[in-house]
Length: 610
Image 1 (cartoon, rainbow, N blue to C red):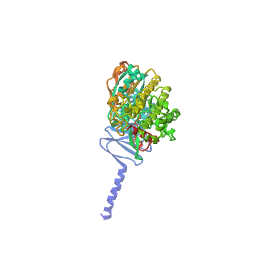
Image 2: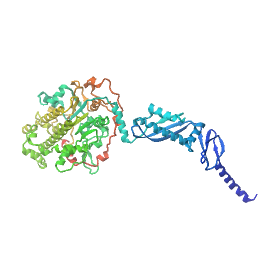
Image 3: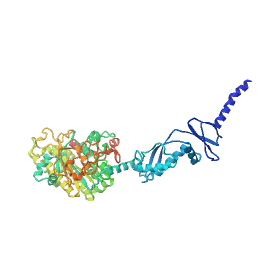
Image 4: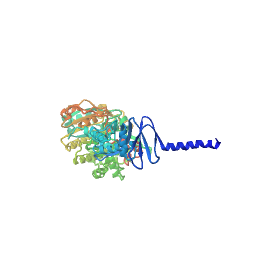
């Protein structure tokens, strides 16, 4: 044989091999195959193990294992309530000769696996039309939709192995609405309403002597007809931290409000703490998730105002009003909805609107002293301390009057399920005048004592009148909670070597116990055991008919409530309210990179308090 012939042998074998690979198809042992005519569309034929001829491009051979096959996928469906859901599935299928042949006949040439997948997804789409979206979000389909799906698949003989469907996925905002629906389903039906009144720095040590003298008739009524006691503060006893603990039921390391001020990353300047730093839900967020209406006025660290089911008036409204009256534009975020600020602003006042007659129930000053207190140059002079205190009093009176007007405006419109308002005045006035109150301390001149000794008591009386106005504007089925975050040292307990407004030591004059009162148709009159700030949110949840949460360390003050109102057994606790409704949109990066026009005014106020 010549070398040329020998060289042509491998080439010939290669060509023969290629032809055979095109004409022959090997079916492994333990498998089955189907020969499908692509052109004539004749009936498919089963092929056993071994080699089989086929015509390339004319016929195809699809091979299938005889063991169970698991199909996985995800299909877009539309639920009965017309919500788009992405639904994952997993189907175990036993492939036998009859099923494979039928699949090929029905598929018209496509493979059995593709056809089974197509039929499964079509069945899922049909089933979804009879299920609500929240049912499709579960780990497993409820019994009724699952039975419908299995019946649809059974007519093709497809349900012989495992069938897993879900949990479905929807857009985040839709998911939030579903978790809110679950929370609403947990709530006990109730027509009761709740009003929470925060009075910073108030305590029984100062209030009780005034009650006995008949000077605080509204607080006296609540104490007489309701449950009353002390509330223990936390350390450090700083208002932003404490009031956020009241609102969230959690400690500062968890809720994120850790000081009065933060550093602005843009300017390096100190800025007031804002709502963007709060990392967990407050009671107004929980109420919104539960489908309840709420209105919140002036609570610490609520700027910029968050969207809620109601109205939120942030702690910047009064400062924004002052800035606006002085020519600066509001920075936004003062209220939610934004339009409420524009609506209420014409009825608000500024510091210039405070007259000598507004001051006379608290301090004895002349018109000249009032004018001097409004002059920064005079406040830095010989009588700077007294004029600075008077300037603080002017601002506090204007701010309190503004929040009073807002409170009454909201309550007179339509009382929500939950109303909360915070008043800072007693604490601020204590920080400027507690050392001048009765009894006269060493180093305080008789003249200063005569002029300023009634400032704190006068503000207690003003706050009591405001409390009475609120009580007259709420419905009979309302439960009221009045509380403070701490007390203020009074009488002989006052520090002798440092004034209450000493810089960088704002908590030095704070007393460890504030006051607490619960009042309403379902409150049992009498004394309460000492409560903690952590107990307020669980109590609010009880009063709103909502379940306790395992991540809240406090305990509801159920002993003060009528058992018939509570309905016997407690609701089963949920893990956390953070898992329900809209996720909190905290952003410390955004919060620390800008400031509203009124930030400087707030910083100066906070500096005056320490």
